[in-house]
Image (cartoon, rainbow, N blue to C red; front, side):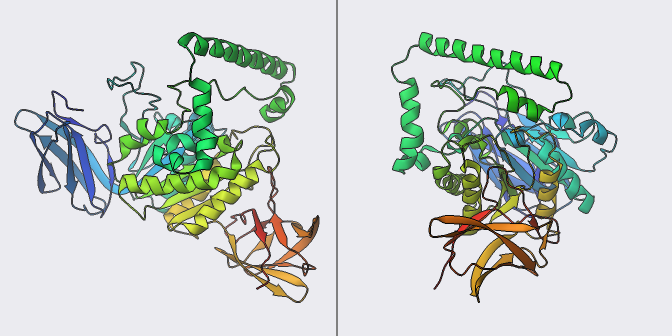
Length: 497
């Protein structure tokens, strides 16, 4: 959208971090058909704004550990961006468990006294739910800015991001890191993909597009208002009951309280402008960072797609491929956080999501699986500790251990048993007795297994046609690699050549 003044896109601001040794773009808006100049790290660059006032300048790679300044100008105006540093830039995205702020983490107060990171910054992308045809912004939308991570700013950083950052800085204390938070709680992956992903597949159309139109078509503003009145009343009633229960039984955990009282009603009624609408956040959030350079993307989501787990693999594949197209980087690394345990879902919903996450990581290049299936809270979908999730991410993105969680990659029939070979492990170990479920015809039976090196031996499996390992909403993982990472839960057919 053409403007009367020269502007940079909001991400290009003081304290920004850009990837080291990687070409990148600078973008903004100006009066249409005007020349725009940029100076950065001894590079002098020029472009012309298009008919809509948008402009884009490509910058050659800048070495690591460099601090520099950006100057952007036209004939009448000048913008200076200070304290630009080069390092590693990570996009954190998904729904509520990565949105979960560090100030809500159960270890927040204990951690504050130890926060003394060098060259660590973060940026919260505004959670713009809807933008009207006139491109006006809501009055209450926060003004975004890059922030140095310190005790007075860390509270609004993603808790997963904090623990990831802490582990990364323990390993590389002098390296620069920038985290870009781009998430929205309560959302399906269908909200984060472009129209082409959903409309190109009949099953996705039937699951997301048709129900959306059935929920909004033919309704008046008063109809939507009445639906929200009823919904808000249900939420208020739930909150009253939960508050009364926790006051009466203060010793009971939030997880157990929710098991007794029930969960907060979700989702709210659908409207044409709801942030839950298909494709919405792709346009209002992801497209807003399309020109910014990233080294890696962390995707932690799936909880809200439990009602339709059978289509999640298509959604996740479509999301990764479409984002890489948007960012013009076909090998942009994605790190998929495999869901933790959570009991209160329809049977097999979460294991189906985990299996989709596993399958996508094994079938698309540069997609990595980070399993936290050994964590979770049975009745609280938002566990209050994100230490394990973030720490595992920090170790994997830093490169000090395997790039993925342990996964089965090969099977071999040995005598009357089945030998499973596991990658991303050299020494597996079982914590207590380890079991898998094997299916012989229509009967499922539990079978104890044994680990040796990077293999898992399943005795008495000569007639097995299918295997499941911790294929449950709330798994109890027992097999880990030498770094303490859990073997991913899985379901697989037995191949017999």
